[in-house]
Image 1 (cartoon, helix red, strand yellow):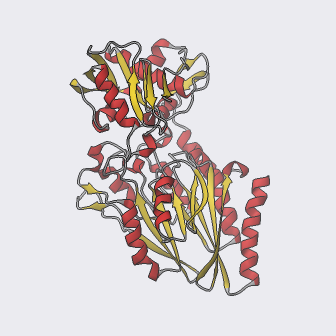
Image 2 (spheres, one colour):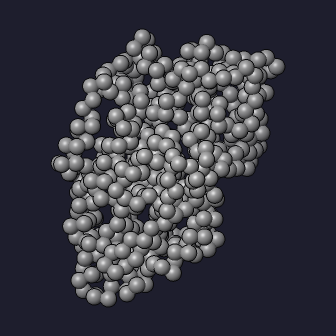
Image 3 (tube, rainbow, N blue to C red):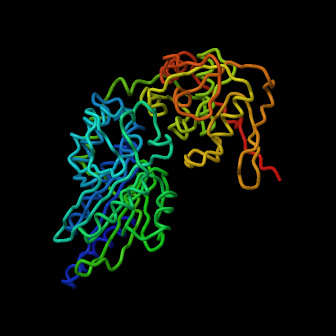
Length: 475
């Protein structure tokens, strides 16, 4: 109830400003990012949006990317991703940019999906000359009661490198110029045409802050990609982000005197304070009424934490490939935990939504060490660096210096000089830099199928939640 009252207070104050001071205008930007197909939260979002629109006319609904991948009822729909797009259309989204996960089903699929989006999709750092993917506009100008608001979109190109995170085949024929450079270029081009200028960014809050520290370009940055809660002024510009999984909505309130921005306020509002909109809830319930996805396939004896889930996946691919060592990248583990009890088919696809396949290769400990060190010290893909990115069936320690640079990797159970058969995900096989091996290839066996088979044949699963990897700081 407290958050509900806080929302009413925001909208009420805005309405009072409009009513009492004719020369002042209040504009509200409602924002989401990294919803990852969590359509179960849309009925609460619908209620929040309706509450704001009932009070104000100057409301713009914005999304900063990664709309699908992470919910089997969306990702395994007859047209993957369509449930989330249908719900966004229903809510009346105005503008969005691309995230890296928009490309998970390939650029041709995304090109077709954009035609189904009843809102503008903008991206200033994407260039396309392919017939399968339309060239998107770099920005859009939306008018609300005489106020012109410009929205420039950018997406990360750091993880590829040179393109968003994902399999390189999804980006063939597309170019992704530096997002910071393009954000600067279009800020200069669009600023004279608008009263309010907004960057809708899917390059991460750290990269957003880098951009803003250099110069004042935008009034607001609506960010995504790094799943942070951000409400920060950087060099006079508001930098925002709402976390992930549609747990919150961002509320940016701009007050203008004439056409000049006088002040900007931002609040992150949890959606669990809202009673679900009944009509939207009925639509979501229809998507969830899928007997195949709801089919139980097995169970866990106790809760698997983040380590337990990743350990299970690494062990499963190693067992399937008869490999001596298994590695699984943490970015491919999409659930933070699996509770004790039954597990449905949908839950398996929530855990592994990418159609990932098993790859096998032969590697020495020296080659494994090089792979781990390169990933840990990656200066471009900061989102996946300076952490344990590869969970393994074999224990290892990453030795780091005082500046958190990885110096060495110790494998207490492997013998130096010996070659081991290694199982790994095809994402790592295709995309990790400095990967050295012999006799490598992709098997065509899907990880999700292996997990389903294990659940059906070996339940109950007894998870191993013990960390096998650790970081050791050297003094």
